[in-house]
Amino acid sequence: MQANWREFWKGVLAQLPLQLGVVPFGLIFGVLGIASGLSAAQTILMSSIIFGGASQVVFAQLWSIGASPMVTGGSVAIINLRHIIYSASISRYISVLSLRWRLSLGYLLTDEAFAVSFQEFENKNKFAHYHLLGGGLTLWFFWQISTIAGVFLGTKIPSGLNLEFAIPLTFIAIILPKLRSLAHLSAAITASFIAIFGQHLPNNLWIIFAAIMGMVVGGYVGKGKSQ
Image (cartoon, rainbow, N blue to C red; front, side, top):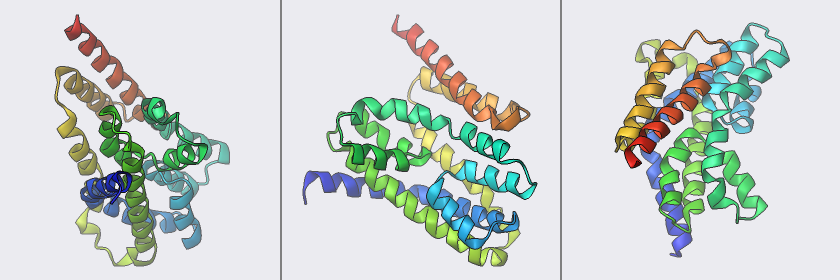
């Protein structure tokens, strides 16, 4: 097998364990979408078009209370601003790729896909874009299937299972292995503190604020140690 497709399947395999948290999230969104008044088709297509779990949940919640299109669209955009951080991180690695590649990878660049594949770019792996493609497509497939399952089987899922608890567990599993220095630990603690105590911020701005302050503090600590 050629090296590029070996990297593709490495991305697939690296992404599979994370689906233990993604699938319950997708099921929850499928149930929530129908409960909010969206049709089955609208709920399913949202997972294909937006392809962003947290922003889809907020969209469904705002839709259910009749929020204006401006408020709904603005809230979704604010929550997805974190993807600018991901894009900025890998842009220098994929700028040499064709427009088709950049558009495809941009669409597939989610939290889990970035967490799994970014190290491949950092390691100067010339086939890292295949790794991201494999991981991103794996996540996309499971997200679509779990959304569909939530739409049509949601009423049969016992509420006592508390499937939403799998969502933060997924991100904890992604982050913990990456905390290998004081700078990393400082960034994680800062972002966690703001995420917990900043829930009162409007329009879910705590997501962006936590990410930015985590990077600022982590960068400051890392710079201090290097001097």
